[in-house]
Length: 178
Image (cartoon, rainbow, N blue to C red; front, side):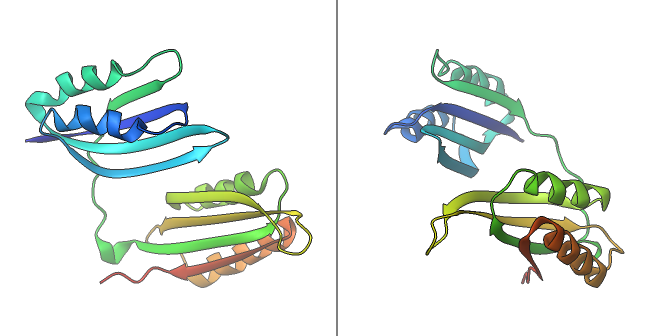
């Protein structure tokens, strides 16, 4: 039997962070499964899902937590089993947004998605300089899961309306899975 651990790591960015953690994981016959990592404001931030034999989960948790120090934060928790929704009853979509950066964009979009019971499965955001003016441009890319019965056409219409209010362009496309 396997246990899934979700580990969150933050520390000042420097070479060797991932190697330090993978070395510990390897010592417990565990598998580094899913991860997202980034350099944010000079710090390293990472989140990883690790599969480990159930009888090794507690020991691995302790070993990972032992890597924390005054500059490194390590949070380890056991992942909860998720009831799988049949593929035909839920749909994945890719949401892309781009426009002049200002406060409240993510909150406005995420509040509307939550009202519609839409789950944000993954999201990336960034602020980049516009090519000609160097004005800050906010970009967001998200993978969202629509609940059964939600009209894609109505969702597109409402997101277009929100985009107009926020001064951003929003595009929504179904994710094609094989």
